[in-house]
Length: 425
Image 1 (cartoon, rainbow, N blue to C red):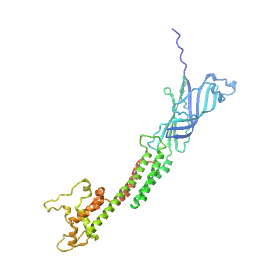
Image 2: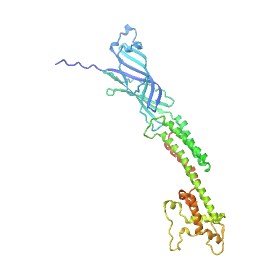
Image 3: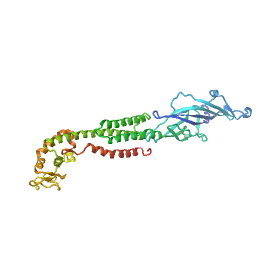
Image 4: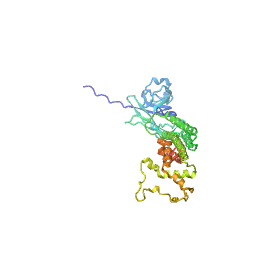
């Protein structure tokens, strides 16, 4: 048998540290950061030791070109993206005990996994991971070498910078940067303008309902502008499958602006249905000889009293059936308490207080006259418009919708905006 193998030589320790000078850029689309700084490596090579009394100096500075003639460890940056920017070597020095120090200015483009959920008030953690690929060497922590916090760039501020130094079991030296986004740009040039354009959409509720070009133009322009803001933010970040605070706000604002358009479509429909109903009712009443204002009001009331309410009309509920005790009259058919029952030739009062002769009241209470008026109104209203009819008038009108959303639209938008951007505004 051969001689026993000699014991393995101890691994040579190598120290690395990267002093970042500038944060050049953050590419959110590709999730990369670009930094520039000085990468320093230090190790001991006994073959380069010299007698300082003979050399007359403790440290010798060698020409940069001689770096190819001495041994140097291979430094590997795990998350570096390949770049064609060459390193610029600055200093190569050797101490009398053989300690070598090599400094080079390096421009690094490294991968950074980002999360945009809290955008524009997000904080990103970006690591730069250094390790060695040379066998027989070990990465040693350089505890006394601390990197200074670099200045940020116009969009990002370096909140914190620390090192996770290599250990015997973990041969990686990690430089951890925490970047906080400067949200002023997004607040001044995206969030506040979007709110203003939602207010433009809201102002359309105060424009005359007959002015269709003005109302549609206001809301459509606001919708397109908000859509453009949304596209500009989407262009900054990669496609993500989770909620982003700023995008949720823009998406919600876009729908509020679009709702103003849809609301006017319904309002305009009700406006046109009501115009047809009023025209048909007036025509039918004129043909029946009902021309006085108090007579028009009275027959309108009489027809409405016999009609189903809006809830019953939409859900198919029936009015209360007649009972035998009151002679077939329902509770709603009973004369109102402020109207006297007609007797003889004595004039009666309608609800407005106007006097009606028995002959005119008989005409107004004629079932055929009421049915003819109701028929003409239903034909004019159309199939969809009949849903909104209550007697010969509409139970919901265009002005009702406009007034309702004048009170609801803005408070609801403010509440939802505060919920989505509770620390932005």
